[in-house]
Image 1 (cartoon, helix red, strand yellow):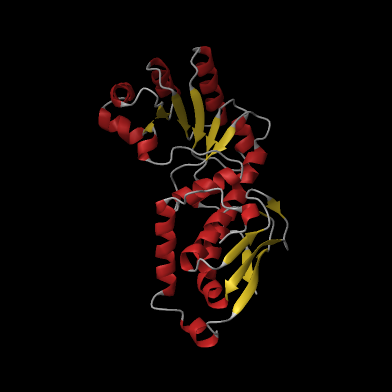
Image 2 (cartoon, rainbow, N blue to C red):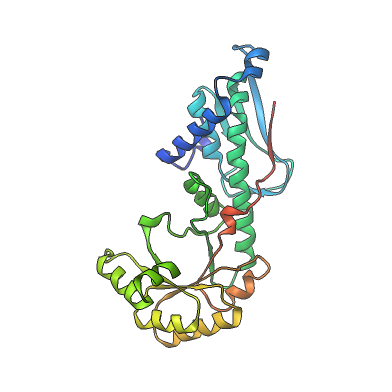
Amino acid sequence: MVHADFAPIIQPMPSQVDRLIRLALDEDIGTGDLTTSACISPEAQVTARVLAKEVLVLAGMPFFARVFALLDPTVLVEPLFAEGTLLPPGTVVAHVRGSARSVLIGERTALNIIQRLSGTATVTRRWVEAIAGTGARVCDTRKTSPGMRFMQKYAVRMGGGSNHRFGLDSGVLIKDNHIAAAGSLTAAVERARRVAPHLMKIEVEVTSLEELDQAIAVRADIVLLDNMKNEVMAEAVRRVRASGSSMLIEASGGLTLERARSVAETGVDLLSVGALTHSSPSADLSLDF
């Protein structure tokens, strides 16, 4: 159960989330929690608090609560702050009330999730703040942990970022290997256009200004500038705008937080950052009785 004032904003919970949580619980519990079964009475009840131990952006409480909902629906999770809130160290984030055994058994899985997602949201917020006022947006990639994509992309949104395509079936993104296999950038885009639904945009990755000119000529909807220096990106933006194209321009590859603002100031629309989901450190939170 979850306190009504901060009920999860994800209803119904996607099946892939439940599958992952059940897998994590099965992995951790195995045939049973030997320590808890030996030490704790089945009748024992507790009130625990979830504590932020460093500055963080809160993300993942709906999934934290879902762990206990699947393990023991009588456990009550009471979040005290909205998702996406920036919290100082020492903040009590939530209360957890119910069977001591259930809370102890679910503790590690629930914390693993909220620590990972709050870490992602916190790092995303830093990127968003770094490019504030430029008009560009920070977005994620598909470089997520297996099975955690829904949750990790949710965390990026809670940090103020935007989501790129969710999976291979949610957008056409023609990359270098597609171009090589198709024979040319032009051939790849033309083939994609013949089969893609009319509402679906076609994005193409380019690594040079020559490839960019081809993407403009074939009227791609979005262009991804891969591993380009700032001055080359600025020229790419100039060429796209001068062509009269409404093409969105995405920068990716070799991006760092220190470099983020200068990249955004070249005029690109998007900075796609794989590190948001594959390299963000977990935030430090604890659950204490």
